[in-house]
Image (cartoon, rainbow, N blue to C red; front, side, top):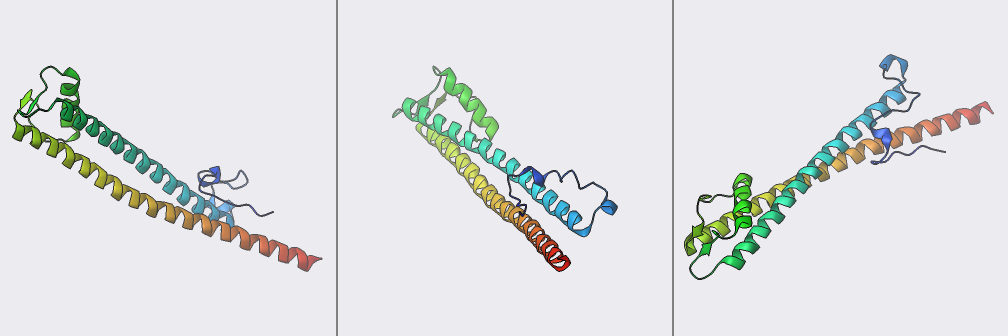
Length: 172
């Protein structure tokens, strides 16, 4: 039965026990399989890292949405007064750290200042979403490349199996 490789197998990061790390101790097939699986494993790690970064940015986007909701609840025709909302004040401090551009010392915002704050929150959200989109595209390319490496390894195994079967048939 032929061995199959997949993106989720442990074979990507560690070779089989019969394959040592000394290139001289291995044949072309074993060295090729080792290279293919190491490359695939490296790419899988990059995909996981990018996925974690996307998740972190997605959490920031959700956080910004919660701030926008709080602002919409507190806003009135005069602007925005957050002096009695300690939770929103803390959220805005964190938003400033994320990169939202506004006067973080203000507790009262005129209508224009409030609108500027909301626009700044929306622009930061859009920037994070665009970064996620780019990262997703990069992840897709990495996954395709990892699949390519695994396909090459599977083809190598298939060809090896055919060669062994052919040799056995000739011996019989």
